[in-house]
Length: 321
Ligand SMILES: Nc1nc2c(ncn2[C@@H]2O[C@H](COP(=O)(O)OP(=O)(O)OP(=O)(O)O)[C@@H](O)[C@H]2O)c(=O)[nH]1
Ligand SMILES: C[S@@+](CC[C@H](N)C(=O)[O-])C[C@H]1O[C@@H](n2cnc3c(N)ncnc32)[C@H](O)[C@@H]1O
Ligand code: SF4
Ligand code: SF4
Image 1 (spheres, rainbow, N blue to C red):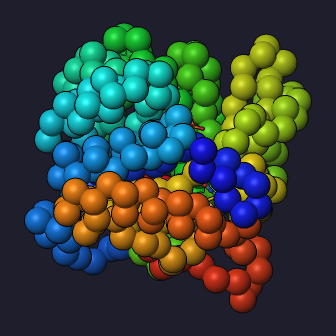
Image 2 (cartoon, protein in one colour; image 1 turned 180 degrees about the vertical axis):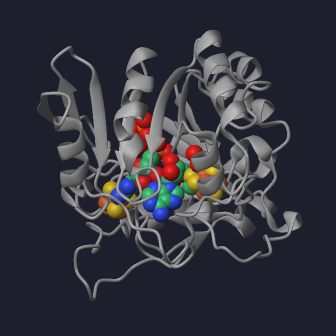
């Protein structure tokens, strides 16, 4: 079992399989073109899997594949099947922008994936295009329909931004409600990679919009998730992720692995240790030692609300959100 010094059990590994992305979301990526880490610097699926086996053997029970855009990585379903076959009861999930999902959903399901979180920031083609800087809405919505059809459980993530998509909070809630998908509204996390003009909505503003049409009850937190849940009168549940707070940190169960092999103990800090050399040498014992060291040094909580607090400069397209 992996336990940190604050007595939290770490059993959730988020694996970013690539930092590359086919979108350029305003809140995630810079406006100017930039260069990606060369492909040869990334860990192969075999190398990532070698580490994942170590993590599972040490007690990891939930694995989320993320990115960048994970569906850009060829043979992702083969990688998912490797993990599923190694331990079929691992809770395997993925976070995706869904642009390439229509053609991949059945293969992902057959490989053992059961849960998907999809980013949907607008239901208006021109707004979705403004946010992602590409005409994306048609393929995204088709991908979601296909995922539901093959039996994947889908949650939706939306980042509401002032003057961009803040008029669509209720539309997106209703789109999800009609399809039995939970929606989580994420407060925009300020970061040096995003466009300067982006301003997010906070939880109070979001609840005021939702409260203008619906009555809701506060359900609190569900398990280890950073999402605060609310229930409408008809039983439909939605969530708000308030990264500027830290009350969910006391139940944090997660660490992150980047495509280059950096093992990150907390989303908010720059600290990380590389498992790259260990897995490339096939030194499984060393990989396990690094994993334990990273867990041991996991920070107690983020310092987002402290204006002088430390912030990570790592991009969310690198850590996987
Ligand atoms: N503050 C904080 N926010 C997080 C953390 N993990 C996820 N989030 C936020 O939640 C967003 C959505 O995360 P997802 O990739 O959908 O995963 P998840 O919320 O762990 O998913 P579930 O397994 O469905 O609960 C991320 O982009 C972050 O904004 C975390 O450890 N700390
Ligand atoms: C980095 S993306 C990676 C997976 C995939 N490309 C996607 O967009 O779903 C994971 C999540 O991070 C969220 N995210 C990225 N940048 C963010 C920011 N600055 N503030 C809040 N959430 C952010 C996205 O909305 C998405 O739900
Ligand atoms: S949020 Fe996801 S889809 Fe958008 S640019 Fe970042 S990694 Fe790509
Ligand atoms: S901010 Fe750090 S400690 Fe808090 S929930 Fe996220 S990863 Fe865990």
